[in-house]
Image (cartoon, rainbow, N blue to C red; front, side, top):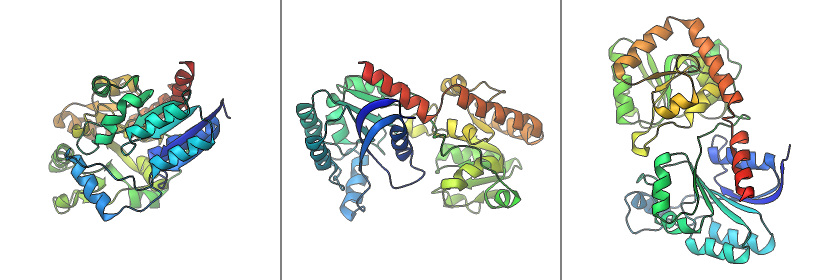
Length: 349
């Protein structure tokens, strides 16, 4: 059902089914009467773009190329159609002069940014983004620590919201024994390599537990132990969601470099029907009740103890997983509920 009779120009990354930017874009289309789109990823990545992207991580004086001519496309769209909202997902290549021009052309159009990454992490740092911050009417982030940083760079209205899941994508799949063999196991982790994650996983393996890891950059642990299966690739589409139910326990580690206190998987795992064992943080504890809707740990020793316990208590695992799924629905952790609230607040200003 379309709830908002407005026009939105949505700019984001739309070429992968698993991309959360595409999920938010699709949610906008389900909530708004008209949504036009411009894709950052409509053009192939050039060699120069790869070099510039690498250098920009380390705050070199390099501006990321606008490989899809998105800035020009925004101005062209604005010159032909009156919009209520310009929604830009991860605006690392948007120029400040583009936003200034939008304000001049359409003073009543609200310019909104959504940034799922920690923009102060060198991996996501963008000089253009920093320069453009004063020209956004609203800037939505998923880390509380970003709020004061945004204000320091002149951002008008920074907002915090929890990361959310897509109810049309993240939901419990039907699985069979073949799926379990192909994707699952007793304990699993889905994500890229980080030293802290590897240390915890090796600790479990060293104490006799079987772990299977799906993700990039884990090759160095390929031959670490017969109890550790490294797949060296990520999971996408249905297989990503199926894997949440194909493991008895799904580990949820946080990215330290991005100062995470929760992550996309914090809601995606329960929403897909998985049993989540995550790092204990105040944000996780506010999302799910410990021991009833999810489980948490604060040390490798506690992680080991809880893995051993829940591997032996299947009924408790299933009860907690069901309660976590219900909490996602009743507390409105979906994109639909989250973006609906965001739009209501924007239009009320």
